Image 1: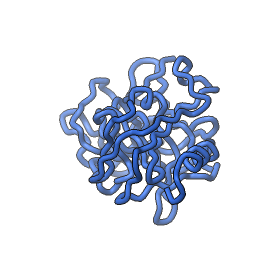
Image 2: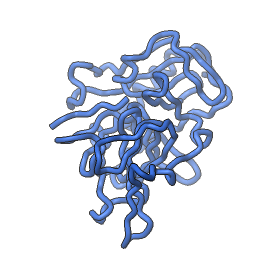
Image 3: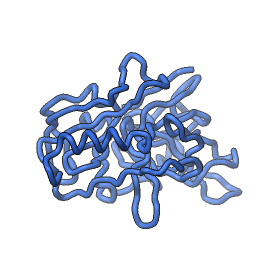
Length: 254
């Protein structure tokens, strides 16, 4: 089994009706999935657009640890219209770059900004442990494709796709189901090259909550092909570490 670690993209299968599926092909990229980044201002590009993070407090961004390994103190990050530099990188205590994907390793990191962001509301954290069967939205600027051809298109557009969480234990897991499988949802998606560290949101009522962080994909051949299994770090398992780190390091009010 191969583990693929992505630095953001969304591969989509678009379902127009239960009896008839339309797959967005390379010849006609997933235009229907393109959304305005301003609608998700808490989702931010990292590493010059090669990865993704989510603002979870005015001065903090959560992302994958394997993404933060490539960040540097002083790097500039644009959140909305505000530019902030990186002040500190905090890795989950169980992170081990040599054992990525192992059960005992958590692929999470927090990026502390040099001063708080004032114009963007941070994402709410999903704290319930009932994610199995929930519909999630995943987002990113990375490469897109059609689920069949492993050749991926990079156009820098911000896309949203959806899936259903099938397993929620150490991580959140879901498969990329083909349109004719009878299991695919509308705008079925997985993340890919350029989406590492990006969010999986669960919507409850009028609010969306950060439930997962893109970590890796399991596959025997190529990433982004129908049948691959996606692995997102499970936020509800790490609330204590996330809030403890933020509250210990942030001045009152941040």
